[in-house]
View 1: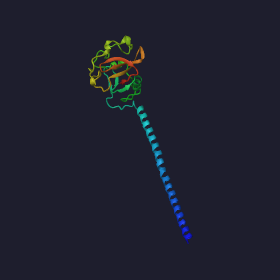
View 2: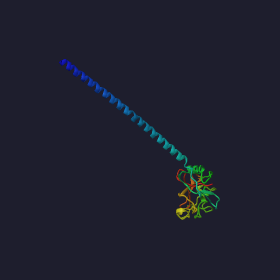
View 3: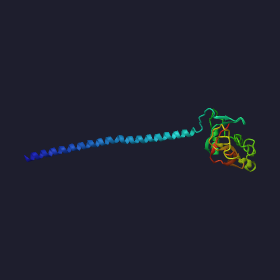
View 4: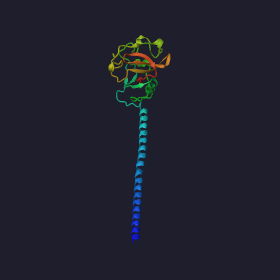
Length: 221
């Protein structure tokens, strides 16, 4: 009789162990199934982030490509009655000499696409209020005379600071827009083609500098 009860107890004990083992296996399977979507989600997030970065890079590239696609509005082109030249009523900052030339050559502004960086004589024709360096003034630097040693003279030093009719005392026509003070011309110095002539509209000064310096560009046609 004792053996019968002992056997019965052992049987129930084994059944209990088997039941616990089965429950543990089911729980493990459920845990494994739950980890899958999390891993996939992480991968998908990583891909999305990379795609977003690529999109941002593409947008940056597009922004660079569109630097010269300026919006034109009425008044963007100003015609100088004294010279007959048409000028961009605006400017571009922070350009070395090569980039200033490229900017104007590629500019589409006011319905025109034949813009260029002005020569030093053309840039001087834009000066107002300083007789020394305005067109026809005593300064010897012109398109026909670009050597520093033989062409630059004291009148090229211009006039008093901030005494012009333009905004902030700039020496250009009063009705024109623009944020710069120093502007590149397309004319190089004869003695050194790594330098080019420029005009300081703070005081009408005509001078030159290394072509790597960053100044403004105002285009002409």
